[in-house]
Length: 272
Image (cartoon, rainbow, N blue to C red):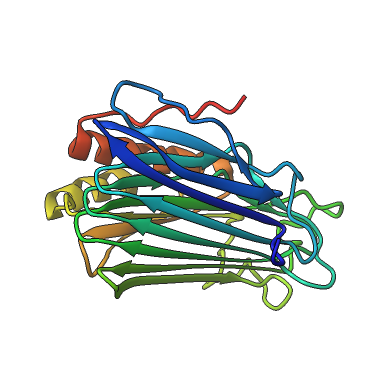
């Protein structure tokens, strides 16, 4: 297994208006379910599974996703990513994504749950051609702790690198270290326990859309921020005290851009 606890490679292409698998490979503690088509749009959905149930000390995972021209893919997980105690070596996951012109990927994994004394590092590298569309979100959630602490995990590190036609256009690095700092203070989590990030890149992004999104999120009782990128796209960052609050905000944003850009409604990714 070349040192990987789990490895997954998935490539999809458009065939006569329907997105189908071009290549699927997995081994170890990563798998994908059979493809699902939620409607007649031709967009395919794959669920990633971790049969092991969680990430443990020293686990290493690798995912590679490739979309050919005009391919449309929804990628999600079957359940939350659970990171347990890592006393010796942090758990690690790297994902590399390739998006050809005209392709569309919405990658919305379930929340990342970090338990007591957990250490986890994640790196996503996205290679896009101009004309591709990308939507990604992640949610950091503290796991249950026997003493009731909200930040009992040691360290979480999440990095996103996005390249457009081989040029770095966005770099996002989140590092949360409760083992080193008081997360409750100003400049860190500021009284909130959950952190959500959404990243959207698409040629269809307009100032008018950003204005409408801003008016939607500014009235929220949680702490929400909207930032425009150097290319056509934006990020949304949310501080809240529950996973459901962040999911609600992301759902509203997702529905708005899906309606604006594709005149569709995002599929309901039922997981129960």
